[in-house]
Length: 135
Image (tube, rainbow, N blue to C red):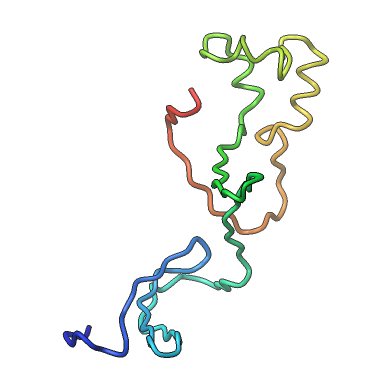
């Protein structure tokens, strides 16, 4: 940490979904960055094996808006519970899984029903018990 006002370098904290937290030193004149400290990661870890991206929807006038997705992963169980506020009103979109052919169709693509005992790529899964945005 420099106490000099006109220091040629600054320190910054860098974090990304595919990199552990780092303290970096940035040289202002040329933009070069040097990692000074990094949070250790246990086990084999290759940050280049992970992808993190920001998605934008671009309007006709060039305005960009972030795309924030909340996946509907428990489709079958959710649609089978008519006491949930949106279930019955969404039968037009998803179908009523009480009907055998609709149940089979939803089960064929629903993520929870298609998890198998097999090798999967490394994943970062962030979840909460109750998400009021999708109630």
